[in-house]
Length: 264
Image (cartoon, rainbow, N blue to C red; front, top):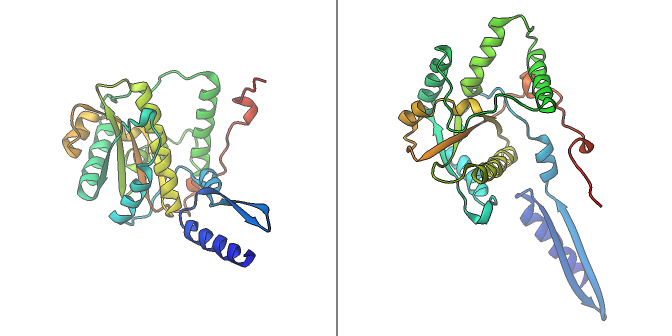
């Protein structure tokens, strides 16, 4: 019997290994009138994916197969949402459509066009958040060896950003214009995170970019996104260039005692 259980556990482990999720198996058996609990927590690299995922700021010039993107989205569609409303619409841009998008986004930026996002960004952040954002900006420049006073180099980086860091795929996440933004934004955040983790699992990199949603009127001309949809954010997807400094610098996160408040 014990040998049979061992074989069963090995089989199940093999079957779920490719999914790389945390799964808890609890088996109750009765051998010689004694109850045996087999609780096997199989850590399928979910923690590693959460900690290992990072914003990729340079992608390899290599297309991502459509079936791979489909697999990622097939996983992401199981993301939770308020009341199972699933308020998202995802528009996947690749090839010529993405090339037109990048050209438009760069052209609008260089022309100093007014940013008119469907979901406006904050213009003033609380001090703690502003400090973190400022620190990231310093790291982004220093990792590339760019000095603060080197405007040309800073402009070049900015142009790379609005060009989606040369990603071969861009997923635009949209919500209904008629519904309350706040709850939909929560759900968009959830599915966006799921997409990023699923992509990481496939050996791909991602970068969430508000810069992909700055000119919705122009985007609609290119991607045929209807007027009743608000464009929230773009997710750049591709194979990461791991030799690029910005894809390797040491990241920081706030300590738990900075944002976790225990009430006992």
